[in-house]
Image 1 (cartoon, rainbow, N blue to C red):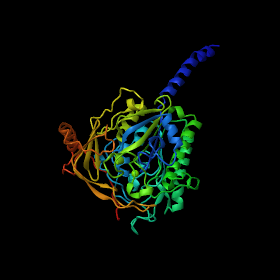
Image 2: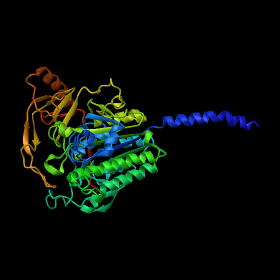
Image 3: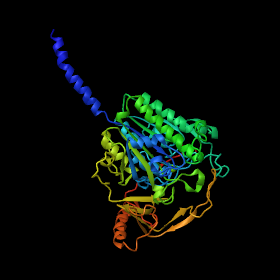
Image 4: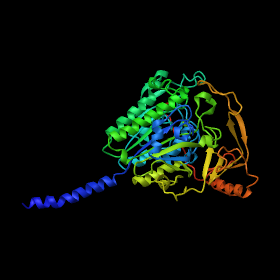
Length: 479
Ligand code: MG
């Protein structure tokens, strides 16, 4: 008799604690990060000739950022910044790493995956990695429990029409830390987007009872373009449109799996891409819409990317954020949302949750963003609506013979001087207003000088005091 009152007394406590636990359960995080998709290559961002119904629905159910940037407009550097919250050049990462690269992401950096794994998250990457393919650089050494995908870009393979004979070894496909096939064929590449989606759906189903971090990185629409049979000719807008539509389908599969497994309400899903369109590929490149130039430049066509965030009940549906933001801000934002611990070393990103949550009074917390490219060239600085370029050599396809069907055209060199643009009334960076605004030029020069002191700048031959070394591959004894 004395037992029952005890149980009944305990029941409300148990129920309350379950409720508290459910409330306290941190959100799942899904980041879908495609490759070389232009700013205007999503329906709601202005895509023409094909449709992206799932991404458009995601935008209707979430929040679209119209001024979101990557840290550098090239694959490896961009991905390094996203995962570590640091400017890529702070951590010694630049360019696009080739097969067998002797550098890669350093063991001492903290990735989003490592931060969330320490919080008890299941973690996975399905897609292209591109932060080093030596064993010490692979995703499984940097916080990911599971990996299925290619270690670098799909064009770094012997079959790429633009590759010199013998330039690239056979392309491997990894599962975990082992290649499960070496020497992918065109037919294999056709299946990759679908296979990444299938792995993502399975991962969600297997981990629905615990928090998870899922990083899906299709290597499309980076050249060479491939789609599975179900998307060949589907868009009516050529192979590029087909590739985007298959990515859109994959997004639909992932969102569907979240619903089916009952975790939709507790999952933050982010969609973006690692840099703007690779314009030299002509009809196999995307579009930056009204923005200037594309991949491999510090103009907005290279740096500004489509960005959609969705979290039912937490992020306002059908909303638009016009404030600037950058990939480096995601790690500290996720730290705040999940209780994750920031590293002791310096990072560059800042929490932008108020912008994601739709706080209409929220402003971007940075005084400036810095656009580096190449081996540590500070090419531009952005503060508020102003963007100041420093003298450097860019590249352009303006007036050049366009590439076609997977064969690239040739860029011409584009000399850039000290040029100031006001993005609020000149989105396409067409009118240099430096002469009329000397005080703005001066203010942005001072900001740039701060970056040079800390991060260095090879254009002005400065060495920064705050940079760290990349990971370096040490050959095993005897090699
Ligand atoms: Mg890319």
